[in-house]
Length: 314
Image 1 (cartoon, one colour):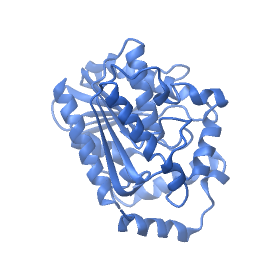
Image 2 (cartoon, rainbow, N blue to C red):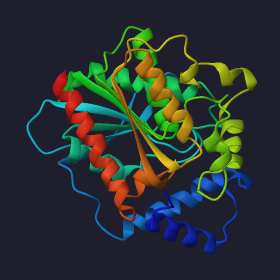
Image 3 (cartoon, one colour):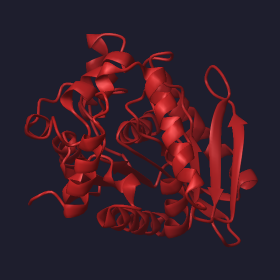
Image 4 (cartoon, helix red, strand yellow):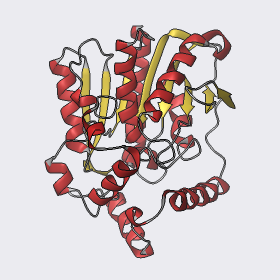
């Protein structure tokens, strides 16, 4: 179908700014720009309220990891979603995904632990998956402290964070836990070797470009051998049996669309209960744009409903 009118307007506004392409800038420059944009957005209004928000440091593989813990209204113990933000493993942070985490906390009625894993190129692969797995283990072993039911833990994330959620689900299966009840994969990158129709069809003009993806992978990976490592390309794992149920959210005009949907089909063939939900007319990143894209809000609600079902299944 055609681009959603709200997306079309947004892309026209972005084009009118005539900013430099992401892949022509240095990581730190982009991070500074994002920080300024995030600060400006926060100054425009109060964030969605949750019962409590706590920033703290937890032990990581090589250094302490910042996390942000969102708790919903109610008595608990609550189920938990360990969330990994997108940004190509290079940019973004806890603040860029604060609004999405707040919405998921309230809609799903769960504690959300958002993880500020180490970024590339300062910390290349596999620093990010190791950090995310360590954070997931920490949540599972600190349930009482977090008012969390450690038997109801899910992982999730968007884009690079969706990649990390899929990887952590495999690590938990292969390394003795924790037992996860669900994986929420929002337009995930799943295969660094994938040459898909959606990359060719949507590789320019729809926010995330082919050039941007090459820039991200150059900064994240050490060499070509990393592309075939399942900790980078979860679709290339030897098998996908025994993984938790999944919801894979994709967007029609996203270069990552096909590899996300292919991973969903791989899960189904492996006997994993998985749902692939494509949002027609949408672009990469739309779910974080709920304030301006109606279908972004719809995707949040669908994701939260899937989480509630998984948490109830226990």
